[in-house]
Every structure is written in structure tokens, then in C-alpha cells.
Amino acid sequence: MTAAILTDLTKCVGCQACVWACKELNGLPREDGARQLSATTLTVVERHGRVNVRRQCMHCLDPACASVCPVNALHKTPEGPVAYDESKCIGCRYCMVGCPFNVPKYEWDRRVPRVQKCLMCYAQLVSKGKQPACTQVCPAGATIFGQRDALLTEARRRLAADPGRYVAHIYGEQEAGGTSVLYLSAVPFEQLGFPANVRKDPYPRLTWNVLSNLPQVVSVAGVGLIGIWWIVRRRQELAQNLPPPESER
Image (cartoon, rainbow, N blue to C red; front, side):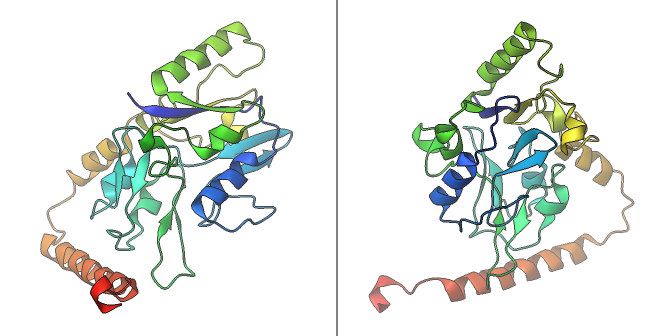
């Protein structure tokens, strides 16, 4: 079973309780007026006309970010969230290029930068059977947590019960092969800043189809050497920032 989030944009009041709960749980600075996702704002409420649009990582069922990561720093967990292990990250930023939703951000102001994105509170809450901080605090019930199949059933129920209220589309049901974050809206999604050209096939499958047809002129050895160089340098940077062993303290 895959955990998921359903956000009903017709219910969102723009209070940003989800934004502040996310920042508090993750120890991020409370910056008033954040208008887009960043390395310090992992969920944000954008304003498109009169519509409040909550953004976060889409947690794809078959995530492109994880498929292009050469060191498995990003991975899809059994529970559903796409998690991140910063100790493995080599800073290549392929995930930023691969994401069809332009979600991962890079911390340029740290000595050893990390990729930052919503992790659906996996380590702190979801892996322990709890719901994410953002869905816990939503006062309007605009964003709810549950199993993906159950949330899709609920979304279809709302569409059928009040067709005049919604666009007849559940964003995330099929986009990029399906995502663990789903949306309902009264306004066409392309008018709200959602990518309009996201394909329905999982992006890792598309990537492999392209790579498998490339001419065999690209030096595998050269690519391997570059990857090794990145890994070695990143490991050195991380090692320099680790606390000393207890025996040396």
C-alpha cells in the first residue's frame, strides 16, 4: 500500500499552516512571504488569481529523480515517500534535471550542500505510522493523508458528487506514471502553474528508451571516471564535516 496526500484546492484558505509546520519539523528558517519552493521552503502556498495552490514534492510512484541518481541517494520507500540520504549524495544535481515537476532545490550556501525537497516527513512520522506534519495542521481539511487507492476513491467521489465544483481531472493519478501527491481543482491545472506537458509514462522508462538508443560513441570509461571523481571528492567533503569519534572527544 502506498501512502499519499490529496490536496483539494477548492478548500485551501491560504493560511500557510502547512508551510510553518513543515519548517518547524525540519528546523528550517521561518521566512515570511515565501512564494516558491526553495532549499529552505519545502512546501509553499502559491497564489494564482483567487486560487491558493500548495506545492511540494509529488513523490512519483516511479521517480525520475531516483532513477538518475548514480549513488542511490534518492529512493522510493515501501511506504510511498521518496526519501533522501544526504550522506550518499555526491552533488551531481541530476535529480534537479530529471524531475518533471522542478521540485528538488540545492543548498548553495552550505560548505557541503545538500539537495532539499519535501520528504513527506518519512523518517520522523510516516515510517512510524503517523501522518505528515502538513496534513496534521490543515484547519480546512484541504490536504489529507491516507492510502493512495483510498484517496483516489475519495477524489472520484467528490468529482461525481459535485461535478460543477471541479475540473474533471485528478492531477497526479497518471502524470509521470502516477504520483503519491494528488490534486483536485476548480480551475484547469495548466492555469495554476502545473506543468502541462508532463507525460503519463513513468520518466525512468522514457529515459531508458532514449539511452538505450544512443550511439555507442560515448565513452563508458570516461563517464565512470567522472562519477568516481565526484564520489571521492564528495566523500572527502563529508568526512571533513563529520564529528570526531567518541574516543577522540
